[in-house]
Image (cartoon, rainbow, N blue to C red; front, top):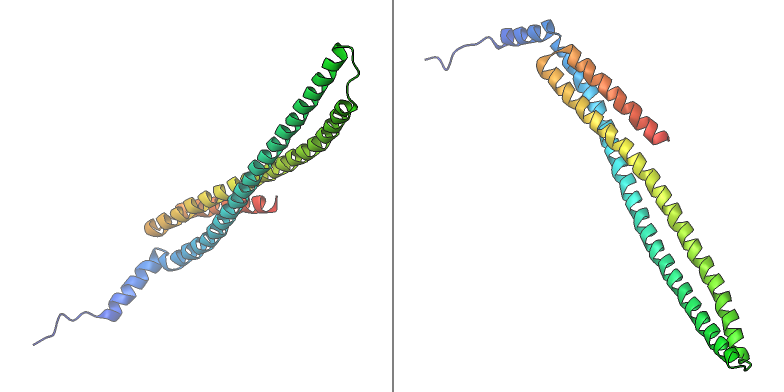
Length: 194
């Protein structure tokens, strides 16, 4: 009793191989696989770069917000010293209004508060300058992030076109995949170098 239908596997294998060769499948599929793998590597690297740049940008934005809070505190302190100086001036003026010589301490405190305000203003302006530097650097990194993210999108489209080309064995789609991938590589390189 036979164990099953006899099929000449060697002939079937040859027929499949011939069909793939006839359609350009063997070499064509290998080229698609290779180009897709290379594009996937670029996509992974661009994705890592996009993530890293956005993370650093967010840290810088957070630092800028902290510096803004410190500057605001310094300006509040500056205003408090101004109020104290105004109170001293009002007290001094009251003495003068009744025709008496005000105590010297009023003039000394007004002068001291004015000097303290200058130092406080200096610190507040330094904090604002640091804040502005962090914001500028953050904006630059966010711009770079967008370049990396756009290149990732191009790589994904290119990889999808490569898959369609492999399924349909349509060379024009693969050329579209390569072209889209080349644009992605160009954008990635430009973003990386600038």
